[in-house]
Image (tube, rainbow, N blue to C red; front, side, top):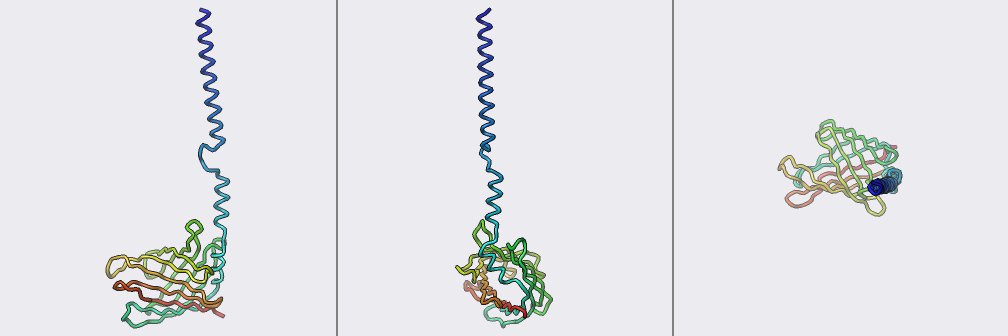
Length: 205
C-alpha cells in the first residue's frame, strides 16, 4: 500500500513538473512575440519610410496657379487642336502628394480633372492618379524619374474604345524651370509610337 501511494505521489509530481515546463515555455514564446513582428518597431519603420524625400520636394516646386495650353492630335494624320485652361496645384497629406485641380475646355466642351503626383517609397516608383469629367474611370500609373527628378516617365495600358483592346501609352513630365513644365503623351498606332498630346504649364504671375 505504501509503495502504491509513493508511485501516485511520484506520478503527480512528474505531471506537475511537466505542466510547469510547458507553461514557462509558453510564457517565453509570448515574450518573444511568438514569431509576430514587433508592432512598435514596425510602426516606426513605416513612419520613417513614409517621410517626404527628395522626390516629393521636386514635386513641391510645382505648387501654385498655372495657365495651361493643350495641343492634341487624335491620329498621326489628323490635324492638331488646341485648348486652354488653368490648374491649381498644392501639396497635400503632409507633403506627400501634389494635387492638381484643372478646369478648362476639351474639344470645345467644358472639362475638369483632378490629378495626384507622388512617390511610393515601398515600390520605389513615382505614382500618378487621374480622374476627369470625360470618363468614369480612374487612371493609376507608375514610373521613374531621372537622377535630378526633372523628368518623370510613366508607362501604362489603356482600354482603347475603338478597338476594345489594351493600348500601351507613355507620358513624360518635364520640369523646364520653376515657372514652366510640360507633359507629353505618347500612344501606339499601327505598332508605332506617336505623340498625341502636349500640355504646357506656365506659372501665373
